[in-house]
Length: 512
Image 1 (cartoon, rainbow, N blue to C red):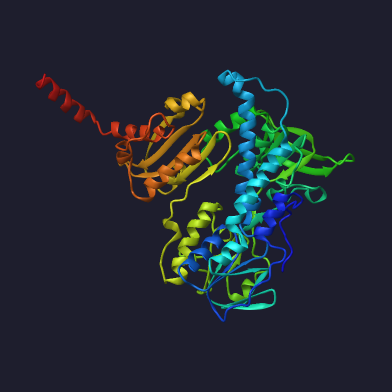
Image 2: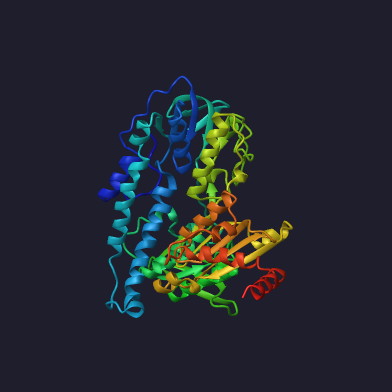
């Protein structure tokens, strides 16, 4: 039995329930079968979907997890972060109720400890779906411990040898430490430890303004921290379109987040009173770069991910890998024809829903000689700030590089009645189509519920549904999904060419 690696507090009843489900302290590994159809290494989303899918089809399956079943998503990622984001949004809405809706005035702070305890309670409840007991009940052998490949068709866990016909590596990734002078001398938080907090930091420094950095910066500012967000690039959310990032930045500034872009010469040190000193040369608000000397109570480092390849014995299995993870082809097969890899360990799309989709491909290709391609997937993503930013498909700059001509159709959320009534008019839906066609090649949504809205666009792209059919689809009024129909209508109006318009004018003159 391996030691618990994730630093969950385990002090509350909810944390003890979580651990009992996904890393039972009294767990005894079963006797291995003579040979498994499939061995899955890693019990995060990709691993659980792979194992459950194969077992459901009747295969002999072994699932191995060294830490906590459910992976980062359950314990230190999607689940806890979205619970914190929801609490922060509720606090913000309460403060804004008087000014925006004539509601009761709210003064003072809230109970951060209660908000975090709610997160732990919900996380523990969700953990039953990922429990060792549940997956054993699905008909597979569940092993808890460190897995190491010892041959091209075998691995060991806890001194036991498991032979397999096929294997799937789904060990994920973890937070990486950037080369910042002084970082090793201070106690800093990552996503693996942030959610252990029980008291709101009076001041919080965050390094890295990607999705996690921005989500947590805004949330902790709304929960009462003084937040300093430092980014080495010239803006936040650099993967997204600039005007989308600007809308998020504007709201974050309104929430009190201090944003330092183009951060250079960042240094850290522990002060005599136990705080953390951050010195950085940066541009605070579109001005000349200046030197800043900041003191914070806590520091969150949110820069990059490192694949979990250590200790797997990949060399013994003949599985090639790099610093970016396990190398796979478009069918998710590694250099060992028996072994596949999915999820964060082998994909640039480091999202739970992407891991799920890739696992389904791996099952077909590994067990049924399938030729499904990862590149055929349409994978959306979302950053859960206020407003949210969601995207799917191609970006304009990538289209230009590939020689793809686009038409662009855009509708502001301020023209959607429900968004106006909800007081959520910041944002837009922008759809990119093939030049002269209604075929959707990509879309960006900035809206309060962008993550929900992007699903319809993803469905259309996956199934070859163009803007014409979307325009013909009845959407309920008033909802914010009307923005999608409005984009479809915008495309339909382009079909009325000057020549066609003249024809109709003549038609109606003749038939008065």
